[in-house]
Length: 490
Image 1: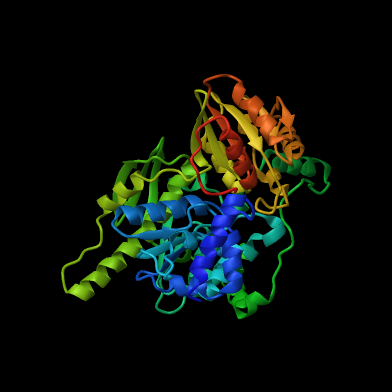
Image 2: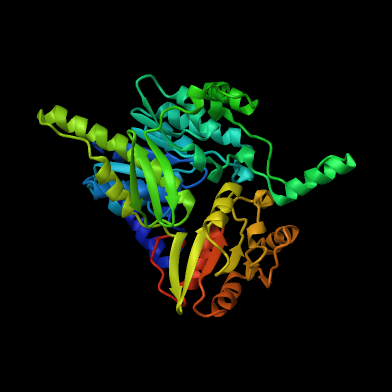
């Protein structure tokens, strides 16, 4: 429909003025009146679509890929707010598309929620897919992690150019078998000495589980502990793809050890060393060290993932340019790639630092056991105040049992200054099991935050929060400090 961009822009304007409907509302309207708008608009991009999905790191990695490709000379469209449903992508498109239906971009880099990625690839076949990891997350939506892997299997099967996979995650690496003939497979990975920083979901144990197992061995009674893990779900969408994915995952699910070549396929980019705002990446047998602006060790591995897919895009871009012009067009050098990754800044709420009356307040998004564990390992609580804010809205996941799979013992000495959010008392109870002192608990985020930031003037503060809690924290901080407009939560 030629009028779709105009209608969408009008809905977007009205929703922003009235502050009703949220950032994805215009996309919901456009999907109803013009179901082909997404495919038709993205189909005009000369370099196609990069789809980024997985449990952890989607928003930051998408930002990295988009930032690096822009740095390297491409015009990039992305969904920067983290609204990662298809309607969120449509809403982001409406900010860029002209009334004629065209927009000025070479390539799209899009973050998609694992489930909505399936809906997306039914409409748009990505040229590139970057699949990061599979962990237990939003158990009420996805069930067990093999269900999430099945969802990502649809993405691998729909990708036409290059699929970039996490070599160290067996469920992700297994999806290589689903890629169509002619689609290239690339990997990102870790050196052996770094693998312990990034345990798989199957490797994780907490103080609660260890102590429970110890009691079980002494008493002979079954180990009992709160734990994540809902029954897996499926629907008609999985048809024959479900069978193919199940076959690919069969060895992993049964605990079988795949062949060495299958597990340790050569990585296009390997994270070789980590430091304080520094990393070393291995490409083509050479190590490249750089300072980075990113926060947390987990984002250094995300950077390796971003480098791998950017290499694939730039390699293809150079090859296409050479074919068109018969000139000696070359892919960008490793040094150029490293320089680009060094300039990437954190996404909102993912290591974002906000100055509040002289105190640096760092916002750290947590939404599953792996993400929370890596955040706790990355940020020393010794000389900082800690606050944890847990909500259980739809975007967070209703099932908060995953909190029992996070080890909080690193907070024992420093304690937690404030616990807040809808599930504040659940969080306080969980901390109690790990003998972590909690100084205050308040389910009202605004009042809890006001009390927390007032204390210990000038001392750094860490706030760990789920997604909707992070939006609420940012909105509250905006009343007392300068907070960048991320375009969400309206």
